Structures are given as structure tokens and as C-alpha cells.
Image (tube, one colour):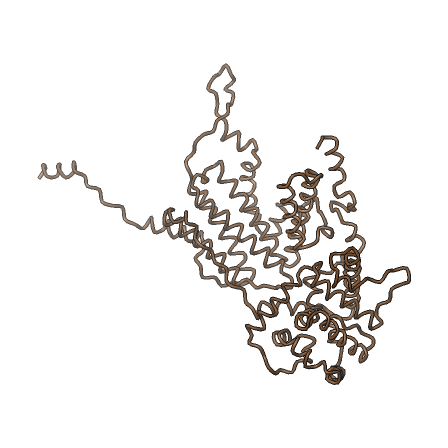
Length: 526
């Protein structure tokens, strides 16, 4: 791409975004505002899961027919409400629920509904549709969990056909119950095309309309119901199917390391595993545990790499790794002051930076001729969209926290580590004169040259103290998580491990030296 053409293409990057301060805001997010942004996975999917379960058990045609019947009869009982979302059934009182059960019985739907919803109602006793359960013919818990997991996995992608089918059903219910009317200029979406000809242009138009309508409907009903059911749904998931404890297999190359280094690496891995397994996890708002886990894992990654490479324990490379660990520790410490809010900001800022990088990659290969670059672009876009759609992602050109590192360190009560480690090591990271002027030049020794400094690459001995600092920063990160969440961890802390090693070495008596000359002299004197 020519320079002028490339500059013109770069000038168009995110040009449709509105700049507010240092933030670039996508058009749709600006139009809808934060209140209009409803997460499919977090909020909407749990509300529609009952329809998905019925459809999976009865097939699309019968499943939609049966679930539509439930919504229609519930609306007959309470005409003020709209019964596509699970939480809406909490708005029925006990007598109304009994009446709905009777209507389903009279229409010969009840047994079919109970069989279809069995796994969901069995595993989720606080489900708003629990009143439909008969508590008979229970599945084994493992069977129920497996069945529900298989169903749920098919509906994670909001734009795929299974998820679009249940969303179209929700819109259809609204129309059937008289809660949704289309003005004459607006074309009614072709729901049948979503099922019968999903890849057609007509189906794509219908899908777009349905997604927008569902988001609007969930926003409207949010004024009457809370997120109690979606929150319970996701956090119940970790109770009925607890996560496997994380483990770390030893790197085969580690077997060749000295025993004390191998033990340090093992303690770093075990320390991370124990804290992750004990860390409280809110699956509904999963940013918190994910960010804390990722930052702790980052400390372990850096500490293990430094342990395996004593060549890094010198004044040229060691401070670079230590500075990264300190930066990571300050970030973690600051997030832990308000983990729910700050961890989310940390993630969203990172997604924005990835989106900006993605747009630059697209400019670099605007004609799509570089297959390797296209593969990278597709992978990056997939990674972002799995967390938040790129067209909804803000790009913040400023600091993710709104503070500089010193301000974060001050608020996080770690100003000393900022003053006495972060700043000195920064000179190495940024190649400042107070680093290169001391360590990458020597005096020429020639007065005619005014003792000019000349470049050099001095070989220096590894310093164990630099590696010991790495163990200390890892331990500080472990400890601040323990203190924040009152975790009682039994794995020996990495810095304490090395202090114990030093104490043991000092306690070992020095071997006695035979002094032959002294012995001979004594003998002669005797």
C-alpha cells in the first residue's frame, strides 16, 4: 500500500466513533447509551433458557407451540405482563400459578412441559417456573447436568440459528399476546425464514430485527423485575458442576534444574492453584475472579521464567522483568480496593486496545491479500467478540484507570515499592541515561579525548539478590489476595521459602579443613 493511500486509510480508522474526552464511542453504543446495553449471555440467555430447553426436548415446531401456549395462557391470567422471559413468571401470585397449571392440564400440555423442563427445574429449585414441577421421575443429577450443559452450549452464540430461534419465539409471543405491534411502514420480520432458510437475506434481516426487539423488551421488563434469576442461574451453575481444580504439569526441562529452583517453581504453581481454587467466584459478574486469576498467573509466569534463566539475574535484564512484576503488583493491588468495578474497567480497556490494534491490521491488509494477516485479524476479532462485540466496544486512548502509576500506587498503599523499585527499574526498561550511562559505557582513558565515554557490553555476574526480589514480589501479590478475601492458604510462600533456604545454609557447619603444615609443626614441637 502506498504511503499516501495508507495515510488516508489510517485517517478513517474509527472515524465513525464519537470522541468524548479520550474515549472513542461506537455509534450504536452512543445511540443506546449504557442502559440500552444488555448482555446476551449474562442477562438474556438465562431468561430464555426455558424456551431453549423445551425446544431441544420437543423439537422446534412443537417446542415453539408449547412454550407459546404457556406464554399465552399466562398472559390470559395476568394481561398486564409479558411472559417470554423466565423472570416474568415471578409476577404471578400463588393462585395465578395454580390456575396456569390447571390450564396446561386441561390442554394436555402439562406432562409434556414437565418432561421437557425436568432437568432445568430439578437443578434450579429457585427457577421462576419451578411451580410447574411435579417432583416425580427425577433424573440422576449427573444426567440432568450433562443434558443442560449440552443444551446451553448450543445457545451461547446469539447470532447462531438455535439462539435466533428462541429470540424469534420471544418476539412472536409478544405479538401473539398483543404486547408488540408493528407500525404500517415497518416490515414484520419473517420468523419462518429464520428456521427454514437461515442463510437467506430475508432471514438475516429478520434476525437483525429480532435481536433489536428482544433487547428492547428485556430493557422494558427490567423496570419490573431485577436480575435475581440470571444471577442465580449462573452462580448455581458452579454449585451443581464445580470447576475442576487447576493443575500444572511440570515442564520436562525443569527436571534438569537444581533442586532448590525446581522446588521454587513448584511452590509458585501450587500457590497459584490453591488461591484460584479458594478464590470466591461470582459467575454472573465474572470479571473479578478472571482478572485476579490472570494477574496472579502473570506474576507466576514471570517468576518461573526468571528462575529458569540465571542469565537474567543481572543488572541489564533482571530489572526489566522485576519492573513488569512491580507494575503488575500495583495494578492488582489497586484493583483489589474495588474489585467488582475496577476489574471490569481493566477488561473493557484491554478490549478497546485490541479493537484499535485490529483496525490498524485491517488497514495494513485492506485488500485482504495477505492470508496470514487475515488469519490474525479473524482470530483477534473472535477473541474480542467472545467477550463483547467490537461494534459495542469503546476505545479509550488514555490510562485504563484514569490515574498514573504513582497515583495508583498511592491509593493501593504500595507507594514504597513504587519509589524504591518501580522508579529505579524504569530507567532500565526505558533505556534512560541513569542506566545506560552507568552500565553501557566506559571511559576511554584518553585525556586527549576528554575521557569520552565509549559503548560497551560488559559481562556481569548474575546477582541472586535480583532473583530474590522476584520471589518477594510474587509473594506480595499472593499475600494481598489472601488478605483481601481472607484466604487460608497452606502452600509455603515463595520468598519465605528462599529465606528458609538461606537460614539452612547459614546453619550448616563449615567442613573442618586439615592443616597439614600445622599438624607437622605440632608434631615437631612435641
